[in-house]
Length: 222
Image 1 (cartoon, rainbow, N blue to C red):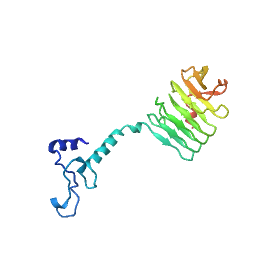
Image 2: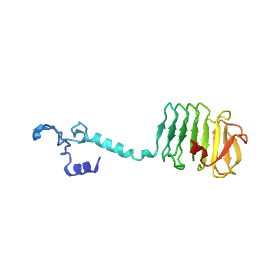
Image 3: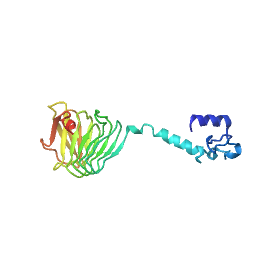
Image 4: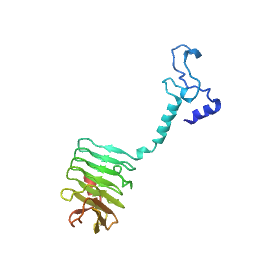
C-alpha cells in the first residue's frame, strides 16, 4: 500500500473512501450523486471498481519488478537476427535463421553474468563470455569465447564434425595447456586461465580444432 494510503488509514481508520472527484455530469455533484462504500479495505472502490487491496497489490507487484530490466529474455525471428543481452543474466534464443547472439550489451565488454544462448535452427554465431552457456541447436554453429571471458564457458552441444570453436585473445601466444575428460565431458584449459567445458565430448580435441583469433576481428566483421 502506498505511504499516502497508510497515512489516511492511520488518521481516519475505516472511515475512508476513495472516489473520483471528476465523475458525474456537468452539474455540481452532491453526496447522493456518487456511491461510496464505507467499511473494511476491500470495500473501498475507485470509479473503475478497483478495491484498495487490489490497488495495493498492483503497486507491490510494480515495486517487486524494479530492476528486472537488468536481465532479459530475448527471442529472435525466422530471419537472420543479431541479438544482444543486457548487463544481467540473460536468456537469448535465436530461432530460425543464421543468428548472431551475445549475452552482453552491444559494444560493451563482457558483463561477467551467466548468460544462456540458444542458437536453435540455422548456422549461428554465439559469443560466450564469463560463465556463459551456449547451445547451437541445428546447423553448423560457431562458438566464440570472447577475449574478456574468465572462469569457464560451456558449450552444451558442440559437434567436432561440423561446429567451429574460436577463442578471441589479446595474446597471440595463447595456447591449450591441457585437456581433461571426466564423466563424459571434456574440459579444455587455456593459458589465459579460461576453461571451456564440452559435455558429451569424450576425447581430447586435435591441435587444429580450436582457432585462436586476435581480439575482435570477428566481432567487428559481424
